[in-house]
Length: 235
Image 1 (cartoon, rainbow, N blue to C red):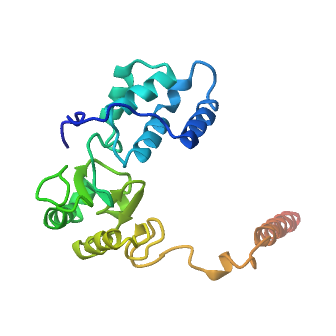
Image 2: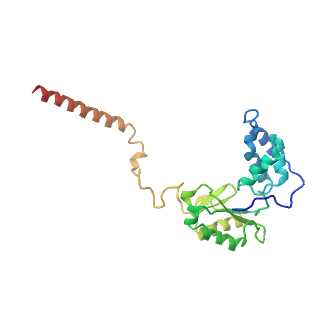
Image 3: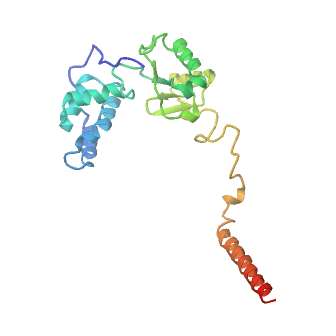
């Protein structure tokens, strides 16, 4: 998608707030001795959320020191995952448009056009008011509900250009739309509704224990057949 490098303008230092410091200590304590490095992604995410949703270089060193890791190891994590933003992003929303094959086939290119028109012609640039930014990313894990975008921790799925406009309008007004499918689907259920397991009796409790009755009926038929076979043999 892009070359991921640290932003040229960096703050002089970084430290967790007292609340985040306590959270970090509790999180690290969940891992066995010598395995504290397993908390690296969690701590980097918390640092990013604290720092206006982008991850500065001092925060990378801060997390590395806290976990006893070499700076380069944490830098590798931060630059590998697109969930980590290495430069300032929109204050209201940073929109990540999935451009991988399933979403592309379902119309992701049209979503990118919306971002170009509403935010900036190029990725990784702030809108004129600094409220929005965008980028194209690899698979965000909701292939059955594409095309989709991710904004911070939430995904917005089953999008059309018009629906993405509404998502952006929601963030602009301070009233974000509900995450998930934007056409009312539950998870990745069929667009036209369920096609199997549609009998309401499956869910009202009336069929509980029915398998026992069916099993008894099968056993009774088998016993009757066995008895009939013996009778025929004697005859």
